[in-house]
Length: 312
Image (cartoon, rainbow, N blue to C red):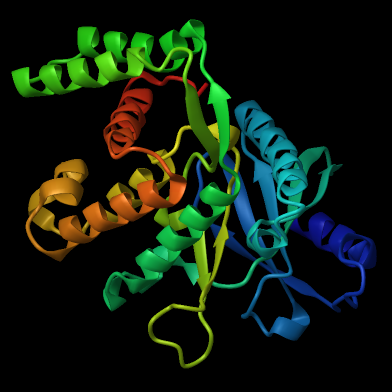
């Protein structure tokens, strides 16, 4: 597959990447993945390093083919949505081609600069804070209000909560908490509710930071987000942010490795205090009441536990 793919890329390079001279040879760096094999494409001028020219994805299964088609369609849709918001366009990978090479589906995306967020974990929380600010800015800019029908509320909130409560072993406190969330969510029928562009898997492995040389506080680092397969144009606020914060907590404190939610919200030390501050800042930026934190956090957990569709 690789000789055929290399030949195809070199022969079609100027069509795939207009204005970029074709390399004499290219190399591939494979990234981990289950449904899809992902390769960074480096040209000879990179010397094996630097920004990848392309990202190539090849499905391993029929499910992987559907996954790649959805990613391609979602990226085209997102780029159209963000066309007036030009400051965000460099942060989204542009789809270059979805084609068949040697009988295998191949998705090609523009390569983006930077290193994955988890590589900065040893340098404190500033890199994470930069990613949180970028997400907040994106979701404030794409915020829309939707008047919810009773059916919307039932489908998106009430039925998943009831299903989760019925099928789970919960403490009395957890049942009371979800009962309060269910009661408040039930009152949303007929009300205007804020939705926003959501990523769906906004985690440390899907975020790149390109940090200017010599900068230590990440203030001007460029943030990019990868893998928009689970994205929605009108998704539930708070979920992306909380997904990132709990994913980042993995490994920060060994004693909480099996309960990242507890560690992130009420664990000892700086992290939980910072998380609560970022969640409050997000809600203020989005113009949503503080109880929406609880709604978004509860639904993030419930949707994942019940394999429920993402949002409405």
